[in-house]
Image 1 (cartoon, helix red, strand yellow):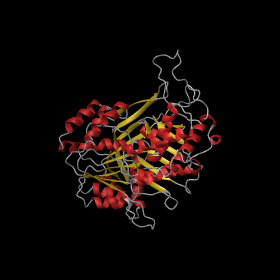
Image 2 (cartoon, rainbow, N blue to C red; image 1 turned 90 degrees about the vertical axis):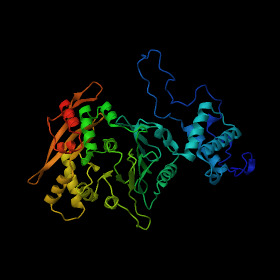
Image 3 (cartoon, rainbow, N blue to C red; image 1 turned 120 degrees about the vertical axis):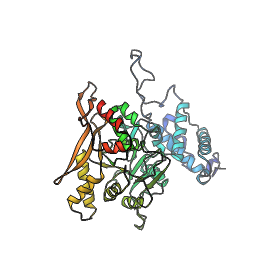
Image 4 (tube, rainbow, N blue to C red; image 1 turned 135 degrees about the vertical axis):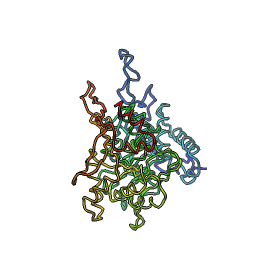
Length: 487
């Protein structure tokens, strides 16, 4: 069904499908050894005998493979592409297609007389299936739940972030063309494209992970692919308490802020956990509320049944059809929302979000990049000013004070840990200055022998915050008082 030509066609075969024995890597023409390159060279198969029982031997992210492995894989892959009919393969489901590919690859290995260990053959089969059907060398990284970011800088350099620290991996692609094909495969799933005429693209994976691609000629050393992964099991506020990101009392206050429809901004730097925190905050929204989310690449995963998810759209080849974040937020107001959640505020849509917060859409939320709550309010003012509305600064500040109730600051510390460093109320203006007060602050006390930062969340002693009446309106003021007393 799939053969363009028989594998045993002898003289009729193309050079790619039937290389001469001297063209094959030398290591594949030798008898198999006891334990070949299924594991990195020089690494012991098991802990040395004097390793203490409690010592944990870290498993590498992916097994490092030799140059000969990649050469052999290229030979077999070329033979597979020459043999298989991709149009007919596309009509099969994923499992049947993978089984068909494995059968053909096994036949190619047998015909060419390649001598491989079982472990090598299994690794090769899996890699080729990933190349044809999945995301190629990225598959083992995407399968790991402890990786937060994947950063591909061209075909030969791939980095990941684990536990807040960046490290290089042995993952590599055949060439920049393979990497570009994988980028195209990812972005085409959400109806977008990336090529020389449109070299920058935001997209997402089916699990909600955020993807950014920047391709040549803008990226000089080959396509640059960045994936911000999300855990399969969504984090809850209890998980944040367990990780030390917030104290128990602080988590209760956040729950009350989310449930009592208090307008909230989440501020922080890149990779500080803003989106994760926003997901946690939305878990306190009542199930009967209508929520509309606006994002550049839809990554929020709300658990409520009544959620409408909107996503911006880039312009087409003719430069037409662009839908901006501001267009989405404006349209939200015609969709009878009870809450509006903006994935990231980065432009003139800040004005429309503040308008929404101030006109009956209480409990709306958004994130923005800033290093402190006060800087977040200043950035909000700057974004509205850049929108070209011509409003005086005093009017903008009064609008901010009338709309935003709480700013939650997230940060990634130098040891890689993520903490909620401030829960800050916006009180009003005094002259031209916006007045704020901190409810909770994270204080660093030092670091331990392993370089981990030691600190604690401490209450500033505010017994009755400005949103007290709001909490009493929703019957949550007793819980709020208990949480503040406990802090």
